[in-house]
Length: 303
Image (cartoon, rainbow, N blue to C red; front, side, top):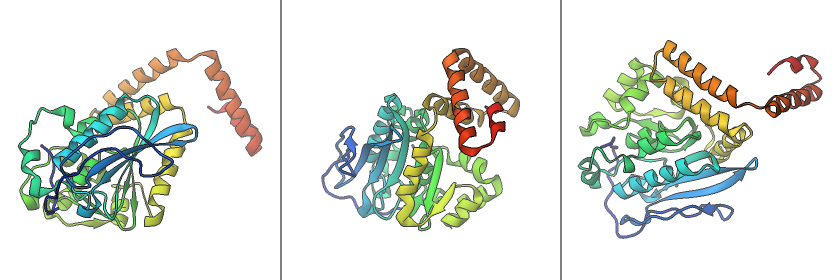
């Protein structure tokens, strides 16, 4: 039960879905098998700022990374394992070749849409939402329907100038079930969401940026580099606070302002009670360093 795309690709012969290195510098995390030729989900780990960033790549480039049932299970498995791995601080999600993802492979859709609706174990969005660390999406080429829903499971989206976005649920007669009808109006506004979904027309990267769907747009050859730069910036910060901040920010989106503020206050005081004298001494050292480097003594009084 999930969104579908306009991808109309032919089924291909036997192969595997798994996790393999996309770069010799990166370490393989796990392996899964499937029946779609050369279709897999790569999960590799790279060091950034002394911390670990997991690079997750949808890999079925010959079919614009259209998603088979086996790929969806492999992707859910990857995020399920990442959610349990306390050593990883950021996830970067992208697609191989010329597309992020054209969505569900409609030529093999029955297995997807006639599956068990209560199977959260293999529900990609459920597993992404359980991931405590920030997920940075690097989108290039087609990002359509099910692919768009997966992209919206990310916390930050960086798009290349060649990226485009479509919601083809209405075109193909399939209801969304990964949160697109709820997330999209909250991100871009209800009127734009209605136009976008009811017409099934595509929008380019610059319009997506203007609407707030993506955070920034870069030239295609800089996309992965920029996504990893964003991941490195996150890694420079304190991991446990980043995780907590993501938790309260995302939880608050489902609450009223008053409920969200109360939740934030309670979560903050849980952290405050854990703080030790060394934490305050570290703050002072940080401010002292900033003050000396910027020659602005007034910074000493700021947190």
